[in-house]
Length: 188
Image 1 (cartoon, rainbow, N blue to C red):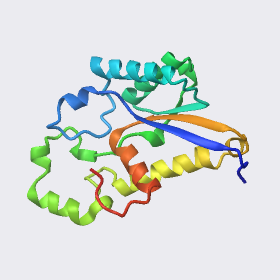
Image 2: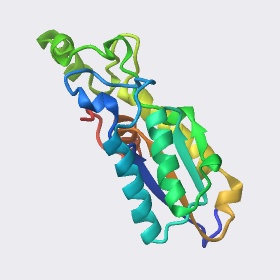
Image 3: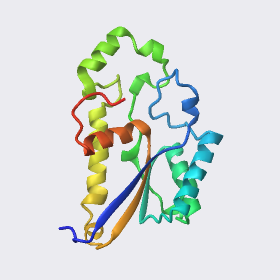
Image 4: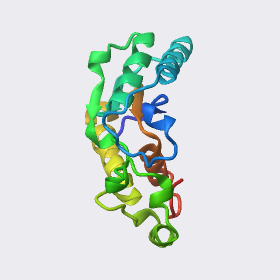
């Protein structure tokens, strides 16, 4: 049971610009070796400065296992005095898996036949060897429910608790799609 004065506040943050984003002609996805560009590092620093100016203090910070999200979280947290060593690294926050399509050109992958199949399957479409948006929704939602919303210490805190969650664009959209109970369809 939740204490009547307990309140949760979440800041969901997509990582700063990554090197993969410099190639929009390629299918992204997890691309584990992808790091932040100099602009991405600057974005993370500016975010941290904004959070500091707003007086943000996190009770807990979570970040995806991928370096671009971890580094964004670490840079922003340093600015607000949150020890980057206390960031909780979470595999469930990883980006949507594009399987064998990752790194391929959009032109080669987005054939008329594939587009018909993608649209017909909507959020249940799964690239070869990858993950559907529906599965990413479940993965992210289960993590949030188990880690935060079902934690008795959090529920009984009797205060506002603030959480920073640093992840990836598509997987965060999948989570929001589930939380907000949008009708099923492709997330773009």
